[in-house]
Image (tube, rainbow, N blue to C red; front, side):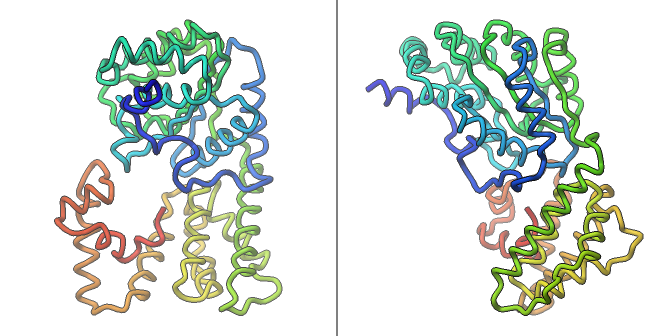
Length: 370
């Protein structure tokens, strides 16, 4: 009966680090960043908040995934919420605290007993204000049990939030001193509401900040080089339908790719997906990327425009449809994406256009984008 009460509490089951197909860091990469985060976790309790600050494409979520996995293995992770603008149940601020509480309850029996008392007295707590949720679902049970734990919130900037300073961070700033045994690891782009939230007087002195886009370039470049080498060699070993030379990819290919990536892991990830897409020969696809004009040497930093252009051009060649049908499908799907200010999920876009999700997924280029 008690577990039924807990399971009926409003929460999302798809937000933890265990859900989805998120990949962690390639073994041997991001060592310095992960070491710094581990030092924070093991360090003085006064720095109870960590902000992994980074521009789009710098690898925040990948690092958060790895940190969640290692922290769970060490018995330190209590709960995690990976936000995503593409899913309604993961961009809704009202679901963050109940979901974290739900996970904490299954991780710690003592916490569960305290939370159940709250749920018996307040059946609709999941519908209450964010402040009330935090106090009743997180702060109360943690204070009563004195549990030492880690809570991870990834991509906070992807949640819908109309406040000038992040609503979650504002509440955290008022409550964090009440639960000194809990640490919070938060990732997010340096957008205005997030910056304002971390500048709050009660949060600023207890927050450690690591800016991914300011990590030493040679360290990032080395990690990206290892990523390209590992992923492309694995690709060659697993594609029995293709003939590869012994030195593929060549050192010059890797050098060009690293220069084009300009420190952005999203570029490296897209290139590997494009080369290993299943359409065309990997050797030819890699050659297409490395032969692009050198004026685009830092595509990663400039928004990967040239890479996306090549992906789109090649996508049309892989679909065996009438040219007019290709154009209409592309226009139908991509047109609204370009015109709508706030991105829509595949489900929402299919409802807007009045077509099935398969139609969206099969639009040229959809296969190659994350």
